Structure formats: structure tokens, C-alpha cells
Amino acid sequence: MLKLILFFLAFTYVAIAACLFKQWLIMFQQDHGTRLQQRLSIALLVIATILWPIVVPFAYLELLSKSKKDKEITKLMLEQLKHDSYQN
Image (cartoon, rainbow, N blue to C red):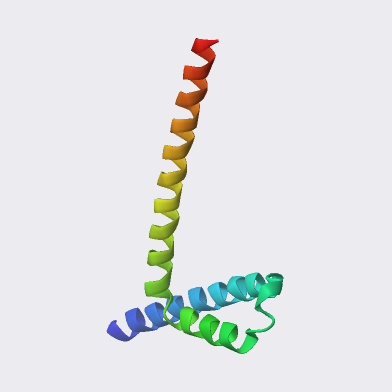
């Protein structure tokens, strides 16, 4: 039973890593600014793929913080627009 669980975990890890590698490789190929540092970019891509259980949560937290900041800015802009419309 333990071997089956370990096999499932290993398979899941490799399957997710393969999907992430494919998506990240497509993004790197679309970014034309990485041509000069292609070796470094590929090394970074391999490291991020291997360490995806650590990389993905941190990237998600960064996206959440940016989203929260954008919401605050949007709220301030809407309040300013309302204030300006009341003065006119």
C-alpha cells in the first residue's frame, strides 16, 4: 500500500513538473528579451521546474499581493472620481 502511495505521489510530482515546464518554456520562447541570456534562462527554468512545490506557492502569494494593491488603487481612483463629480 505504501509503495502505491509513493508511486502516486511521484507520478503526480513528475506530471505537474512536466506541465509547468511546458508552459514556462512557451513563455520563455515568447519573451524576446531572453535571447542574450538563454543559457541562464534555461537553467532557471530547469531549477524552477524541479522546485515547483516551493516556486508555485510563492508566485501565487506575489500575485495575490499585486491583486490586492491593484484593488486598493482602483478603489482610490473611483473615490476620487466620485468626489470630483460631486464638486462639478
